[in-house]
Image (cartoon, rainbow over the protein chains, first blue to last red):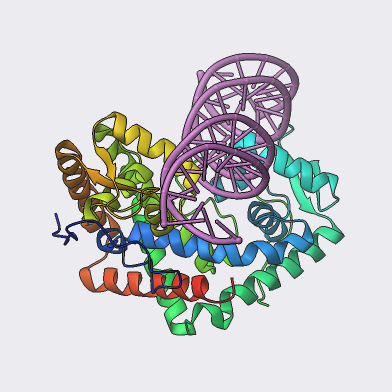
Length: 170
Length: 170
DNA sequence: TATTGTTATACTCTATAACTATA
DNA sequence: TATAGTTATAGAGTATAACAATA
């Protein structure tokens, strides 16, 4: 448990806009949570990345899938799913779209006739490389206000959180 | 830009299950991203919190709304929306549900007859306090493997990321 | 003219059940 | 009997347009 002050009586209506944080609303408890802050940070970054991927016809998921395939030629659908925590039925449409636009192609798997190897095409590789550069630019740009050391620390701590949580009982 | 090794040739199929990380799939680039790691951490924690809120009939959003109201008696819908980044039409149903179950009540606003002040009821306050204790237990429990210092650092860095991103151009 | 709360609605994302062909 | 890929579908979650009442 944790004591959190409450403001008694009705709140003043927001003076206008442009207040620090959120207009004097007490969000102290939520602000103390890793989950809440991690979600907000993720959404903020995704909001930045989204418009820079759009010119390539990619959403964030599309980029993730394309990237995993580009970096793992011959990977199967199933492997993409478990690497990215996507459910198999939901990957079908993503792949179909990437395939239709000529970014990805399926070839028969050398040892398992049920499976198919996924590969990026020439244009797929090109689009992926450019998109990756855009994403890297957002991540490493000054907008995050983090230096290399802080980035490393942040990622280290985040991984610690979800690796612990993913392995343990669940 | 950033060089990322690729594995050439088809991937071996997963030996069975229970591999470290994700079965030898190269996700190096995604793993280097704050956005990607923040999202995974958030989802991991939410996955932990969810079942502990369920007994109180609350999802994560419900808890967030209930908590903000509990800590800000008399707050308006509009203020809840901007504090939690919820769109007004989507808050209506959440409030209706909390109201129907007797956790929240609306009273007329003292100075603005368009608006309504939101308050938790007795049972609402009780449920909120217990739910908050559950959430705090998950967050501070050993599962995250973080000590107080690391928690503080993590939250500081996350806030830096999204406060920078939220304020700047957007 | 702007804002609060609201309806109706559409769109995206995520999840489940069940099928086929191979293993 | 289990797994890879797929279909169909259901359910959350999130978004936009437009309205009445009040400021």
